[in-house]
Image 1 (cartoon, rainbow, N blue to C red):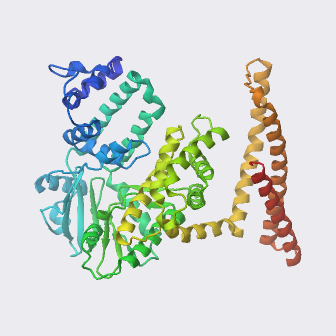
Image 2: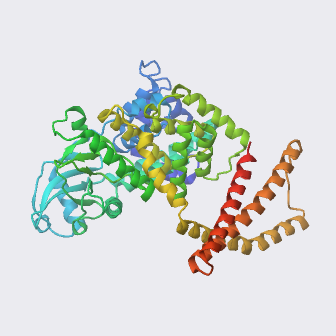
Length: 558
């Protein structure tokens, strides 16, 4: 079926016809003529041959990598992103996409000068006292140069290349057409939700063209680590920055990838590693805002032993609920409790209509256990935590359990840092490093103020439910009266359902009792309306009711 079948699609195709012809011609040249034919795009290629290059000795992953390299920045970026998503992409494709390099050529500084002056609204000499026209680094989207401010401070300037955003938007629009056509031509790929994945990639790639986003990320990190001396975050110069120009404090240090191969600094690499991991887990488990691309090229070691961090274009965010789930995942890995690990994946997965039965969870847990079986019984310092968490994500995805992007970014960051850690110290223990902040966050959960706040949220949700329930019940009765309500009942499981209902009613009653006691105890503690012995008795009763409720909840599952 052709992707140019509707008027709207035809308009989009005509608008991008030149670039679309380049992409389709390249696809055909790299042996993907069958896909081109199924998409109805053969007419865009002169002398089209469906089997062209079909006898190529190169594998499909190799041909896809070469295709990305030929098609330029957008496709290279997508390949690099896919290389970090082993939950979505088979291993052989990941290995090949990891070879993609951003071998962009530097462009003449005169072209960048126009961008700087246009973005900052004044001549270059009114912005900087000096500027090195030779780039420090060149990538597909931007180029980096050294400079000095009018006050003489050393800075680096990240300047977006002219026309990059326009090309990116055009390529993403064409990719949207191609993915839409693939879903129509090959229905088997629909369960993998390619359009949803593309939407995630589109946002990520377009965010990279807005340097204001990166500037805000840096400011958040600076605030989170303002009391930490070890980690150095570059200062942003807001008056010398915009959407396409980012001016930062220059951090003078040695890139970690250079130290990995030749440590001539004389610094204690293990101490640097331990403090660096403390900072990472603080950002992850305490702040819920972390650097999602902590590879060795983005980490600098300063002469005094401190660590500098650069390139904040890719970050992840974790809610309090997600942070607690991460702790539970680490604990499940240590205990080899695969059902608990799968339940944490499911707890964070968006409710998208997929069925989540106990039987299904057990099936996923069996697959995870098979995957993890080579590591059974090993000391925890030999368990590759990041790799296993990412592989578990791939298994969940195979069973149509979608994992939030930020969680996958976290797994990728852990996997990257674990690899760096083992290079710096062969005995590095990622699970052990996670324990410190796991304890801290768990202690927060049992803190009196936190419990009080949680019960206030519970009260708010209960009141919200009580307001909505009458309208919802009224709607149900209306549907019954009009014969619109349909109920689907699986009689074969009625006995189990009745038992679960009885258990559920008991658990609800116990939960309400313990919740009421806890709320009362919290109120009394805040207002100090009872003597201390009476407060202690009330807390004891509340704790006993809570523990009894918890034990009944756990025992009901087994």
